[in-house]
Amino acid sequence: MFDLDAPNSIEVSNAIHQLLSGLNNRDTLDVTDIQQLKRDLSTLAQKARPGFTSHEQLTAENIIAYTFRPTVESCLEIWFGKSQQTDDEIWRRFGADVLQASQGHYDHWALSPRHPRMFLAYIILLDQFRRNMYRDSAAMYDTDDHCLTMTRQAIRNGLVDQLQLIERVFPCLVLTHSEEVSDQELCLSEWARVQVDLAQDDPLRVFEDIFRRHHDVIRKFGRFPHRNELLGRSSSPEEQVFLDDTTFRFDLPLIRNDEGTLVFQEGSADLDHADLLRGKAEFSYAGPDIALTNAEREIRARGFATVGSTNLRKYIIEREMPDVGSASREEIMAQIDKSNEAMSQLWPKITWVESFICNDKTYCVYLADSMETLHKHAYLAGMPIDATQEVQRVIDPYVS
Image (cartoon, rainbow, N blue to C red; front, side, top):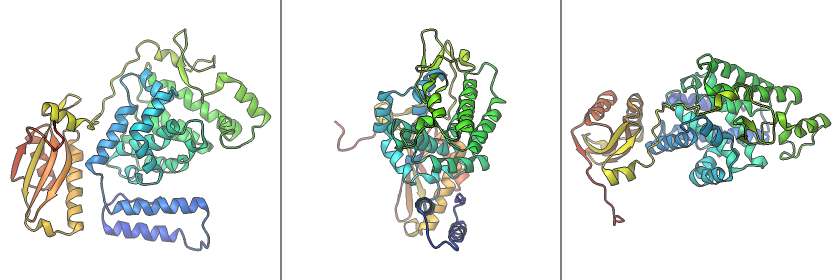
């Protein structure tokens, strides 16, 4: 996979030449090659629209907010609990996004080193939510290979290192789902780097055993025997013995037994460090935690939206920009890229909603915590503000 992060046409041209060079001396393409080619072309198409829209950022943050809960135990319940209610809720809330991501339309989320949380949301969609939506079917694994490719690249590019420690569980989950020993070893290596910064009593240390168990199974069998039936594979006698021994199974739901110990359902063997999960085992997931999907509703009801300890209000900014109405697409996109770069430095105090381009002016709608932040953004983006108005009420034809 080539790097399409830089937003200029030279980089796109170079990427196309790189793509074409990979097809040299290839008279035929197999199904896998064609699927990868489609994804690469889709990514190039996304390149025509550099950066991310405000809606995409809010979608990603909503995915993250749903996935991370206030305690480790509640996180493990949502991640490994195998609840029909959770599966149905993910279908309802994120099904369309999972399908779009599965078709390659969100690949650009995983490619920008300036936006590690977009990558995080991307792998949650492909690696975790697909397992909820297509539970107990081979379709759970359809996007694993591509998600692995993106995750390996994110590790090489240092993107994963920008995530918080608990967020780094998810790139490791992508790796531990692989049936390649090299990916399992990379998972253990990546998690070892996380553990250096974990306190001795940090509940996240339970993942050391989870990842080690996956590695041991792949090293022994070269595949996950519990997938055999779903994938139409015959189990060897040795694999069948493994499948019948629930004390080592990790494809079963994770539950808390009567003794208060976290175990896999039907199993009897404790996880290493399971004692760290007894009691409250609480931690504060420190964001940026800016799921703003309810912001519009809150602003309509109260005049502001609360994100963590920050109150965001809606503002309309007027900018004098002579001849902006006739500006080329490339000129407008260059301004958008500068605006997004400035916004990333101020996140989560500001987010761009939309803009209206007129002949000689633009009217831009933002959510921000203050006018001071709006002016900081304008300075960083090189886009002076001529007038600012705070929105007091939002109405539409459907307001009762």
